[in-house]
Amino acid sequence: MESLAQRAALLRESLGRSQAATDAVVSILGSFDSRLSALDAAMRPIQLRTHAVRTAHENIDRTLRSADVILTQFDRTREAEREIQKGPHENLQSFLDAVDRLRSIERFFSSNRSYSSSDRVLSHVNALLSKALVKMEGEFQNQLSQRSKPMEPDRLFDCLPSTLRPSAESRAEGGKHQPAGADGQEAAVYSPPALIEPKFVPLLAKLAQQLVQAGCQQQCAEIYSEARASALESSLKNLGVEKLSKDEVQKMPWEILESKIGNWIHFMRIAVKLLFAGERQLCDQVFECSQSLRDKCFSAITKNSLATLLSFGEAIAMSKRSPEKLFVLLDMYEIMCELQTEIDTIFVGESCSQMRDSAVSLSKCLAQTAQKTFSDFEEAVEKDATKNIHTDGTVHPLTSYVINYVKFLFDYQSTLKQLFQEFKREDGTGSELASVTMSIMQALQNNLDAKAKQYKDPALMHIFLMNNIHYIVKSVRRSEAKDLLGDDWIQRHRRIVQQNANQYRRVAWSKVLQCLSGQGLTSSGGSGQVGSEGGNSSGASRTAVKERFRSFNVLFEEIYQKQCGWSVPDSELRESLRLAVAEILLPAYRSFQKRFGPLIENSKAPGKYVKHTPEQLEVFLGNLFEGKQERA
Image 1 (cartoon, helix red, strand yellow):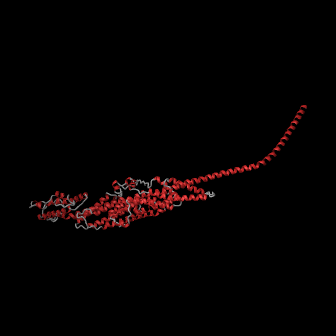
Image 2 (tube, rainbow, N blue to C red):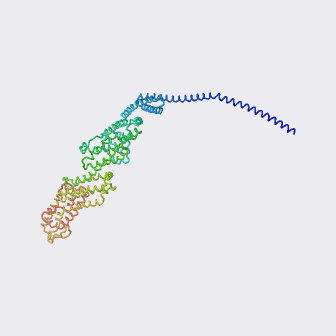
Image 3 (cartoon, rainbow, N blue to C red):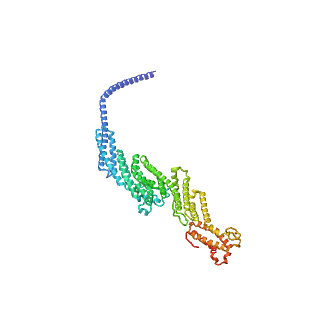
C-alpha cells in the first residue's frame, strides 16, 4: 500500500508539472499571435509595393517585346523598300519576295491600328506597293516580250509523230506539203512544245499572281494575251498559214487550191494538237491563281488564229461544188472530226464557247457540201454529154473515171459513215454508202446506154457496152465495193456482159454465116442447117456455089479489116470473144467447104473462090479486137 501511495504521489507531481508547462506554452503562443498580427500589419504595405513593381516589370517587358516587333516591321519595310527601289531587273525573285514582305507588313499594321504610327506606316507601305505594282506590270510585259518568240516550223515538225513529219525536201520548201503516210494516226503521239522556257514560267506565274492580288486582272490579261497572240500568229505565218478572204479562195485555180487544202489539213493538225494545246498548257501554268483568267486569256490569244483557219475551211465548203472537190471535202471533214474532241477539251469554258461552236459548224457545213456533191456527181454522170466516143469501142474515159471515183470513196468508209450519221442516223451497216454507190453505178450505166446509141454499127455498139460493163464488173470484184454491192449485183452485170457478147456475134456474123448455109444451093433445098455435116453437092449449081464463096470472102475480109481496128482491152475477154466467134464460124466453114468445095476444085482458078483454109481463118480471128487495122 505504501508503494502504491508513493507512486500515486509521484503521478500527481508529474501531472502538476505538465499542467504548469502547458500553461507556460499557451502563454507563449498567445504572445506570438499578437506579435504575428503586428508583423502582418507592418508587412502589408511592402507586399503591395512589391506587386506593383512586379506588374510594372511585366508591362515593361511586354512593351519592349511589342516595340521589338514594330522595329522588326520597320526593318523589314526598309529592306523591302531597297529591293523595290532596285526594281525587278536585277533580281526578279528578290523583288517578288519584297512585295510579299510589304503585303505582310500591310496586314500587320492593318490589324494593329492602335499603334500611333500605324497610319503613317500603312501610307508608306501602300505607296511602295503602288510603285511595285507599276514595276511588276512593266516587268511582266518585258518578260513576256522577251520570252514569247514564234515557234520555228522545224521545232513544230519535231513534235509530230514520225509518220507525219515532212521529208527533208519538204522542209527545205517550208514544210508546207502534206507528208506521206498521214493515215493510221491511231497510235500517234504528239508532244506540245514548250512555248516559253520552263525555268521562266514560275516567275511569270508569280508576277501574274501578284498583279491579280492587287486587283489588276484586266491589265494582266491584256498584257499576256497581246504578247502570246502575236507569237502564235507569227508561228502560224512561219508555218505557211495565210489570211485569205472567201473571194480569194473561190477565185483560185483548182490546182493551186487543191495544194492549199492539203496544207490546211496539215496546219489544222499542228495548230490544234501542238500550238493551241501548248497555249492552253501555258495559260494554266501562268494563271494557276485564277481559272476565269485562264479561259479568258486563252480565248483572246487563239481567237483570231482559229478564225483564220476555220475561215479557209468555210470558204471551201461554200465554194462552187464539183466532183473533184468531194475527196478534199472528205479529207477536211475527216480532220475536223479527228480534232473535235481535242477542240472541246482545249477550248473549254464559257469564254471559248463560240470557238467550239464555230468548229462544229464547219464540220456540219463540210458534211452538207459533201453530201450535195454526191448528188451532183450522180446527176453529172448520168447527164454527161461527152460526144467524143472512141471509134474502136474501147472503155470510155467516163467509165474509168467513175470507177476510180467509187474506189476512192471506199478509202473513206468510216468518214462517210460518220458523215451520213450527221443527217440520217444510220445504223452502221453501210447501207447508205451502198445506196449511193449503186445510184452512181446506175447513172453510169444509163449514160453508157445513151453513148452506145451514137455508134452507127450495131455490132460495135455491143462491143462498147460489153467492154464498159465488163470493166465495171471486174473493177468492183477487185475492190471493197464487192462486199457492199453484193454477189447478186455482180452476177446481174456479168449477164449483161454476156448478153452484149452474144448480141455482137449475132449482129456481126449472121450474114457471113448465111453465106455458109446450103439452103438454096441444091435442088432439094438442102438441109438448110448452117454448118451441117454429111450430104453431097448433087444438084448444086456451080455458079451459085462460086457466088457463095465470093460473098463469104468479101464479107469476111470486110468484117476482119473493120474489127481488127476494134478494141477489147481486157485480154481474157478478148480471147473468149475470139473463141466464141471461132466456135460458130469455123465449123460452118469446114462443113460448107467439105460439101461444096469439090464442085469448084476442077474449075478454072479455084483459088479465086476458096481463098482461105479453116486454119488460116483461125489465124485471122486471132487478130481481131487489137485496135489496129489489118488486111486479110
